[in-house]
Image (cartoon, rainbow, N blue to C red; front, side, top):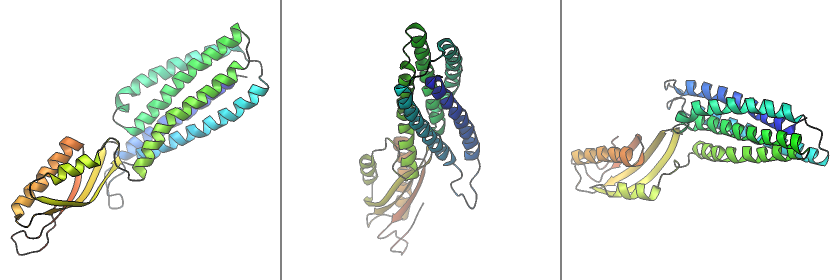
Length: 264
C-alpha cells in the first residue's frame, strides 16, 4: 500500500527504459552520414533524452494525483517491507550511477540517464524514511507526502534536460557560448570588414557547427583570404569549441578578376 514505493518502482522502470533508449541512441549516433542524413545520426541521443524527460514528467503528474487522493484517505503501509525493498533499490541505483558518472559529463543523452538514476537514489532514501516513520510513529500521511516530494524531485531533475534538449532541437546557440565575444573575435581578424549571416547551432552532444559570411577589405588577396579562413577555423576550435565551420568569403577584389569569391 505504499505510494512512495510505487512511485520509486515506476521511476526505476522508466529509468530502465531510459537506459535502453540511451544505449540504442548511442549506437545509432555512431552510424556514418549518408545521402539522406548528411550530418549522421547525432540527434538520436537528443531525441532519447527528450523522450526520457517527458516520461518522467508524466510519472510526476500521476504521483501528485495519487498522492492527493491518499492524503485524504491514507491506507496502512507495511513499513519494514517498504524499508527492505527500498534499501535494495538504493544499492542498485548508486552502483549504476557510479558506472555512468564519467560519461555523463560529456554527453546529454548519458547525462539524462545519470540524472534519472540519481533521482532514483534520492527517491529510495525518501521511501526508506517513509517506511521508518510508518514503523516508528505510525503516521500514515508520511507515505503520500514523501511520494509527492519524490514527484517534485523528478520534475526538478527533468527540467534541465528538457530545456537543453529543446534548445538543441530549436537550433539555439550552444549552452555557454558568448555570441558577442564570438562576433568580436571574428571582426578582429586582419582584413575582415564585416561579418553577417552568422549561425551557430548544436548537431549533437559535443558537436557544434557554425556558418557565416565574412567580407574582406578591398585590398585583400586570395592567399590572404585563405589564411584568414584558416586562422578563423583555429580560433573557433581553440577558443569556442566549434570544430565544424563553413565560412563564405565575400570579396570586393581577390586579384583574380572577379568581384566575388567563395571559399570554405
